[in-house]
Image (tube, rainbow, N blue to C red):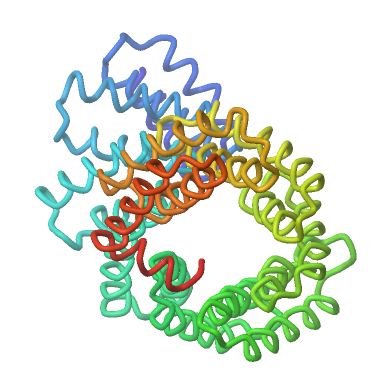
Length: 420
């Protein structure tokens, strides 16, 4: 009976009839013995149902139950186990639980390579998961390698999958840019833009976002006039394509604020970035950039006020993190706080805060968990703090560590040169 229920439930799931599938699966789950095949299938199908009905947290729980049960009964290398783990990884990514997703995906990729080969469909799907997992944890060199690998495979074997090619090109724009490789980032960005323009046209939202991403790279490459022209085009297009109140009307705002910052037009940059933060209230990167702009204008009261918002957001994010590497926002907020306290000579707890941040960034840099940019920022913030305090020996230690980092970590050196 349970076998028949399972097959019927599977048919409902495959047909997208989740309302019919769920009661069947729950009845099946209640009747099945623990760790039996019907119980495993029921957990897996419940994961599918919850995933497709916007219950991501429940989907993770059900996929995890299915994967753990098949591991106990069938072993880590069994095909059913691997299928269930693959769906668990994708559900974890959707929920932002990146540390656990990384650990599972890395092991899954190893097993898929051993059992299926380097470019079997299941192996490639796991690589695609890592394309999004690596950046979330600051693994930019690793992200770039797997992105290039999957791009070569897709262009060779599935050239008709233009959307996948565009997504990979846009991912490479970010991973190369984060490593300071602006020439390569620009090349990938132009390819992505050209493909989207040819396929969807200028009024497509994905095309407009692709142009904005390229414009930001051009700013870092010193091509500000071309970048400004692109942002003008995007802004004009958005104004007549999207309705009032549609967030897509402001696609170009963050990049334009960054352009103004690079041009030294700080007052204008602050005004735009305030709008960006209003539209993205929980975007920590946007909030911290606004803090930096206020600081550069010596508007320390506004900087403190915005930093309090950043602190609230980052502690909320950190409490939901599944691992240390997902707490980089907390460290970045600490570093910004140290900078602000140094600038205002309000250094009471700055040393302790900075040391906590430095301990984390030093460990991540040593383990290659992050590419060194964050560690460099922390060292420089602490150097400035110790200078303010008149602690010459500590200043010298920070300078020596900065020099060593720039010599030993090409990524950190590139980031310093590019000005990101």
